[in-house]
Image (cartoon, rainbow, N blue to C red; front, side, top):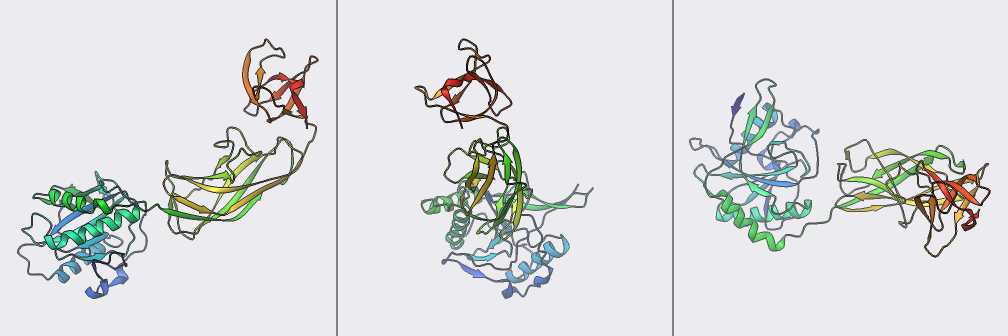
Length: 397
């Protein structure tokens, strides 16, 4: 494996950042050729902040502006990065440059993962710590990034960074490297100075229900039907679907749904809203399929649902309605009466001394499969099982 280490740092297309104490420089100041930027890059929710000192070559007579230009053209044109391998750069005077890409741009760093925001610090060749002049602006920058992205303030670290080229694939990737001096001590002091102002923002999301259709709205009691919902991300943030962050459709009032389908729904009030995209972008529309069961009721039945985010963040969403017309068909439906215990015992055989295999709550409705001469009813429990209940404690509907 052939490795090379470069004293690099970003030159950037500036996006405004809301830190009044900082001076913000634009790419126009440096006269960069913006046409070589590439639009396509992976995105994800940032989790860590890495501060990287970048040392000016000791034997080079370069202005800071010339240095930044060289870094820019080398990393973007020669190494092929979409923009620059840094999100921000700050010099030892406290002047901040901000990348054209958002904080959500993924930069994979070996042994650190994908979801990092990288801040480059331009340092003289003999520096061993952050300058006093840069300390406050750097702290304000870290604080702003952490608050906006809900990043744990303790997930900020300092390290060296180098480019490594894999000889077999010829691919270039970023890798941490040791750094010597008082950089860690200096960063810890900066973090402690901003900790009292750390107040992470709750991430907000918005979804609009564009369309909901069912394969059929004329159903027979107990039948299943498939549906399709089309939803749109109306912002203000991308939604990243992971094992711990995903979408559900939930009955608006949170109560149990008459459309509940056992072994398919997540709970009696929620069914999965599974989308194929791992990144649900702002202004993007996607569809997901779902399945419901015709309620044990006769006539028109309707319920309202909304999209719920499972994970960190606050979801604003419109409602959608599922409405069907249910026919009894040849099925008998019973409702469990109110009892002193608010439930009935479900038994393996039509006898009060038979083994209890389950319980059904008062008010629940079930399809009758069989009737015993002694008044017991065999009911479909809806989970692939069936059992016998006291028919004189039920009402046919």
